[in-house]
Length: 175
Image 1 (cartoon, rainbow, N blue to C red):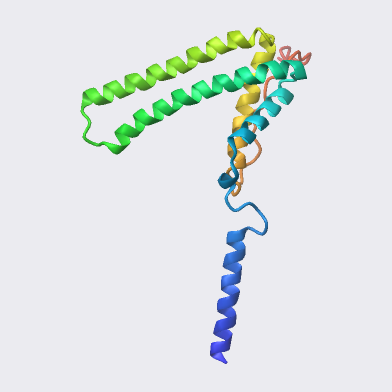
Image 2: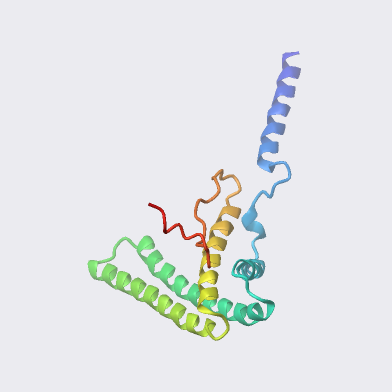
């Protein structure tokens, strides 16, 4: 009888443990389903919706945005490669660290200059107001995308809200 009860309890524990790992229908590993093409598509749709871009504006703007982000990703990869050199090699001299820091900061500056250049290109398609709205939308998309890949994270909704454009309620008259 004790053996029978032990087997039943063991099976029940295994079943419960398996149910918690499976998550009852939730995606077990959301990173396994990541697709760069789908990510880019969703980002472009989100930006177009949040920045109130017309279809014509979005059709002209999205390829430029994707091109800029591809170039920035390449610069970011170079930065990570430099930083990993220090992580992997503990026998670096002070001069090596100085060169690494200077190279990483120069890559950051290069990325910002690239961004400035592309913003001027964006202005051929969009107004500066919409370009600003695109920046806000990109920031919001990144936060939402990161939260999507942390399914067990119980965080309250973000308190950050984008600024209101053309708001007649300026609240400047408060005393």
